Length: 388
Image 1: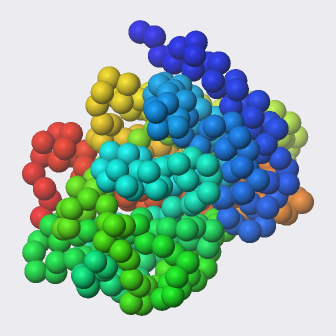
Image 2: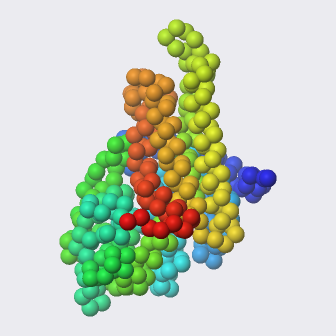
Image 3: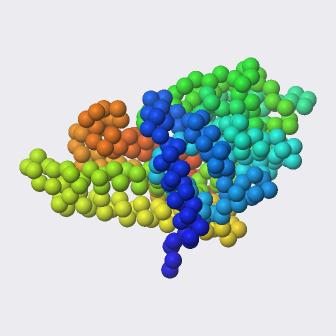
């Protein structure tokens, strides 16, 4: 059985590596570390110049027509490098929804601007009282003629401080079951009534709380049917969970492999000869291979005309929990040195293990918690009944 991605994917992977070596500069990395913002405008502009904001889109929409296997190779390299692509990712994710579900006017208005790098679209799903149960959203949208008035609060609105629009899930009908009374909008963020407050995650990244007080949005900014927002969200969450998996784990393992080559224990014995060290490194390598193969499976489903919903959930679940296990293992191996953070001159491998350990806790919630992914796999993949 052949698990390679093919010659075109290999060529595109090398192009991506060459680009990252030039554009993902030490200055960009330092800015990411200092600010906690995983969006960089210089890097963003470099992607625009290459035509790489959405290289997998059809040529008629401004993309390069890259196939899913090429895109998997591309995404693997960007994940592995830790490049600042979150703003690109959410913008193109929402733009992909518009490609499938938007009106012609919305496509003409937003898709070219997204590909030119002129706008950033962020996600407005999670609320303080609902967490991963995004269908329990209480942010209200009430119709007023040709406009909607929005009131409520969202959390984890990452890059809102840089963003132009929020792809927002709102409740438009409180009198029906929760999945049936939702509507999605593109909400302009630079207007009266929108307040953005910075929040730092455990791993130091900046996200935001966003508040909406009598914010007016034209009906033309509605995506999908009124009260049909859950259908839109299903498409969006599938895009969010599919694709490359495990880039953070691969990067962490590479750092630990480099460390073990020169590390010694207190008695002067090489750590690379320690059976416990070798066992943990080997386990991580095996898990990373599984994550990679799951990403390939999702790409194959996409390449054959399917939508990798269950496959994306499987890959997201496994890779995020593998990172949690591996980062804990490596912090344990390093002992007290394992909790030295980025920026500490004495931190081993630049504090890679400490960062991964803190980041991993959030990774199990991004795009839906592990419990949510297990429910999706059980219900949609195995046909089991919904848990009560």
